[in-house]
Image (cartoon, rainbow, N blue to C red; front, side, top):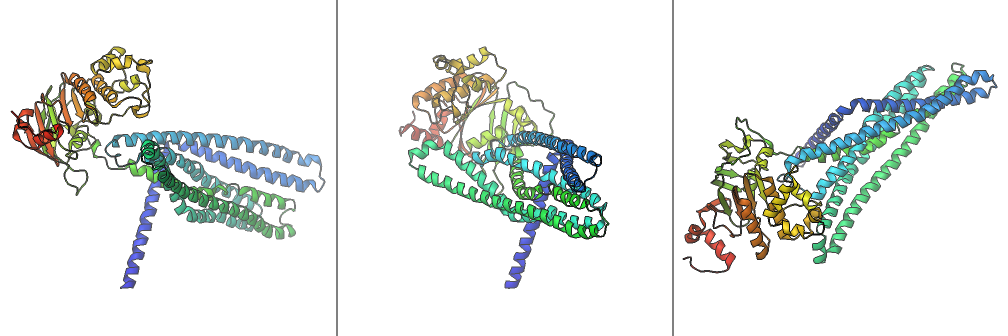
Length: 605
């Protein structure tokens, strides 16, 4: 039984290793595919690298021939061509090295810029629903640090093997010109240095490379969390605990970096050792040939120094193998998010035109769950929001109100039932077209670290001054802005922290007014506001609702007397529906929420 269990474990481990190798191969091919538009430039960089190494070999070989020949006191005329060759190859090596570095880094930096744009464009459709479970610090590490790590792939992984292969081919031809045994002896050591040393380096750095990427990502995520929650950490006296967590992440990253440095030192030592072994092997084979007069004695130094100079081509290969695992791990982290399932991007075939006009929104028996096997977040929701109508959806936290907003904005797609807009399935329209018809005032309005004007113009970048000033006046924000020394040029700070909660909400309402969308969605627009500020914001909301179909989603029963219909949600189901006074008389969930909010238990007259 134990033997059978051991065999199963061995088979499982082998299967996992095969799966890991297949995944790494797929990632490697995907990285090559992303570099395909720059293939010509990368080939040019490799050829320039080969020309650099070739110039170095020629420089060493020519210099050795001059020194060895000069010892025989020949005529200076016999050395003229070689002297010119030394000058040429010395200058050429510097020029080719400069051009190789210039071309390779230009290609790499442009490719990294393209990768950042590609990655952002790929994750943008996932926001916000699919990125809600991701830490902002981890996302920052992926889009910045992980993309930068791919620099090692394109600079140190792709080009060096090509240069080494071309150099090995050149030296094989050069050595065979003297003797095939000489070429074979050189090639054996060259292959060991070009293949064996990188394989050993990769074997040693496989686990460390992955640890390095994950430790760096964890450190970045911890840093961002700490900076964003600095006020709470200080308030609750948790600075020391957070500092210990930071130090733990730093220690883990430092250990991984130290291990990588140790492996780097080992591969440098191997490079020097194998270069010396190549020179020794060439000497062992060449000396008998010189003694037999099969090779001129002056060429002995030429052969040895050329062999040693050629190892410049294989010295980067262990470093490439060392960085390969970390670059594949960084790429895996990028592709992991890019390939995440995103149902909100599916578009069904349609013959409908979505017009920026008053829209008729309907939900019929709508059902949705976030993942297979999870309970329904919405179960059988039906409602109609006609042009100019007002519908409110209320319920306790977790009832499914915000989920409904995510479905309407096509951040997620529903599984059963249907949402129609002017008679057509909502999934038949591109998500961007749907969102252009909806203005949203949410509970947590994000304000960028820019001016008030810039934050307003997010809703309509081409708006005129008269338009955004009118939107601010209708949101009862213009008087406050005019009282500021810099007016609309006032910076709001990161996340708008220089503004009060009510000012941020009125700015969000001004955005919605400036967008002038036919459907207005108010998602907990007055939550977390004091009563005075809440009344002011509600007044601004009433101004915003004029002439628009409005969907009010809230757990605070304020200002709902004018709603055409109110739906009370509990656990994703509609348990009550009707107008304000009718629901109060029904003595159900709505009545209980109303009494709890007002802290009175009086009968409705």
